[in-house]
Image (cartoon, rainbow, N blue to C red; front, side):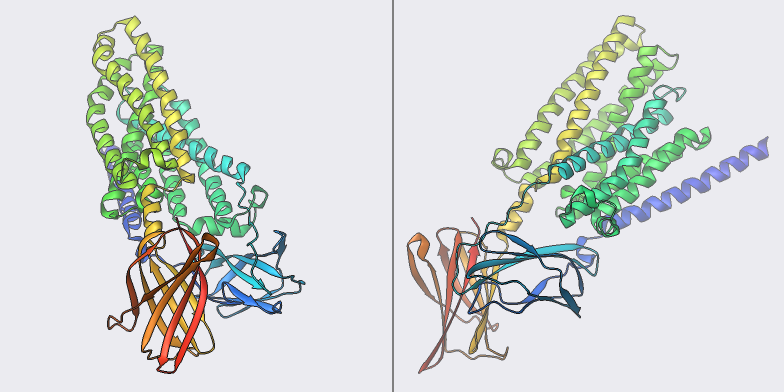
Length: 542
């Protein structure tokens, strides 16, 4: 018997070592900076150029990217808003050549594209060009696919149930419960929900990335695309964690604790692998905070149902279960709260964003639910727990009912948190607002790369790289930037530029008063007797 026990112990030690090693690898992959991932393909050249005005319809279009791509959806939207699918295309190295067999009338058209780059990430965009003369650009509707959005939201909730109620419940049964049987069926059902929701959520991710409807779920490209995103890591780690949680319940009792502990760590690793919070900078802080936040939620939420059932059934180990949980929950809630506050501050940044953005309003809703949950938990901890441990039957009933309310609040929190999938955080909106807008202006005699930073209305700075029409160097004597917006009654604003010595021309202390489509013109003094003027539209964000 001693030899058998020793063998079991050795086996357990090796399994724990393997699990720990696997988790370390997973955590390493999670905290690898996003800059080390493959880059997305970028559109570097189009024919016709964005904003071009053509005398007649082109026989073909071309899109040149920074790396090879595979087209998914190519659409031409006519001036009346009619979309036409473009299916006759060829791939030549990094260029997609599209034959145009349509009869195009005068006005502004939109060429919309969505492709998959070599790294598996989907990218898309649109360019405008006009035949004859510009007109009001056609409205390209971006209707919300409510069936897909609902499926994504439900999938998220079920995945949360598997991670928090399932794996967290398995941990509670292994480490806190006396016999490990109270609530076991519920925990298994929650884990099975997670095992079903994880791969489905991966497919939904692919559909959303490609803008495809639910009916395309079976297509291989959908699953390749979903797996190619950072959410693919979340699903893979979640499946491992869910499997470990199930093994802790179904496997030998001696392995229940190490498997449950590894599963609990997997919850944190899965959540830290993707999402708005984990992608925020600095990632050396945000990813560990997401990890701790996820582990804390799983510990707390996972124990509620098994504990409530143990108290309701008045099992022999119910009081011991309650004592262990109440002793451990205070430091867990403290870590959970600190991690949540840190992540909220990083994501929201300013108090006004709490009410001024959809993300902030969801956060306020979640905070209101958490205040109610914390208040209820505090009452349970300091007013009911001691009496329940002493054997007061009526108090145990009240505590059971209170735990049931806690579970309902937790489910409501899951629903609110799942809504964040569709709302960029204020941090990301601020970063996007700070990004420059760029335009390439090409003419026979000269061309320029213009960048306006930030790309929204207000104080900005403009930077220009001036070249000849064949991409050669152009030694200009003077460069003047001219901005106008006739539809808003804004006449040309002329600003002389300076040459800082890095090969560019700059205009500082420039103010763009209103957002919208502006006309930018660059006057290039080539010699004392020659001025080259090139212009193009540029869209300034609010």
